[in-house]
Length: 467
Image (cartoon, rainbow, N blue to C red):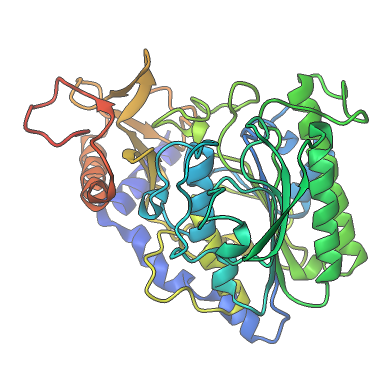
């Protein structure tokens, strides 16, 4: 117990003093320094799975399905245990990842874009390919889901040199595969795609892009549309797992990951390419969130937000390492810029931070806190050691947890499942986390386009919505 007491005291001192914020100055520039040393600017590949759960990979504890290639990737790289998607749903999560900004800043915080909607990612937003600049070839292959009508479509209007894929999820209709090589032209490739072949088509286009751009730096967003329901595994993987069609598709994705890493080795690009495997949010009606509480769309708790994240770059990312440093997909843009030796976008408020020290060394997180949103509502604050949640879905409503007499404060070092609030044991930590919540609301509530959806009629009538 003495060790735990010492750890608790150190955690309390760090939170109450705000000392984590002091890391920012020392962790902002390692990627730029590495590039300045004369190395080729690195390539970046993000393999973004759709609805892949925290517990759906062997390296994260999966038992009903096998992911030997991804597990090998983790053994040869670094596995992050406390990494978050930018949101608990697809559209806001993808907007956050590509811009380095919480989705509420882009106007895409609420829900997912449906077939009959006309909204999209504003062209004024600076995406990862735009931030990296013309020296980098860029491609989005797979699922877009950030606007499928003008002016937001095709993705080549948002900085990508090449697009091949779907406008939205593969369970939405009408569904076609599109291709674009410039902002003013998009071609329909297939108006009735074979859904069991989608992931293989994306793999083939990803490999082609890598081979065609082997001699120059590139950024590839391989946004697979699986294992989002419904699942259509190819014949070679159908019945392959003990986790139904969902598990079969995850095992197919595992084979795709292994193939692409082999391609990088064949082209001698493995040491020049940072590969990140992650998910856009937690699992939906199938899949496993592991030990985490809740799932995709669940507010306030980690199962909808915390996702697998494995970083791999032999010689740059340490092998066989597991890190519990907190991070979020909003960090990709500033991190890639730092590692490429490119200044971050001027005049843009970024919520993401450079986590290259987390990736390339044993660096702590530069984040003093991460903010979790359910649509436009701030529903939780996560620091390295603590989590404070204020809302969850209950009986069809977004149910407020404040003012009920049982505030939800979790010690994330000892209770990763967020099962037991320790608010009564740590009133000083609770007060500090509530102050963080107040500051977050003051920042982001003016950006919302409507009232809070948190149901909390027991709070004072004159209190702002959601408080």
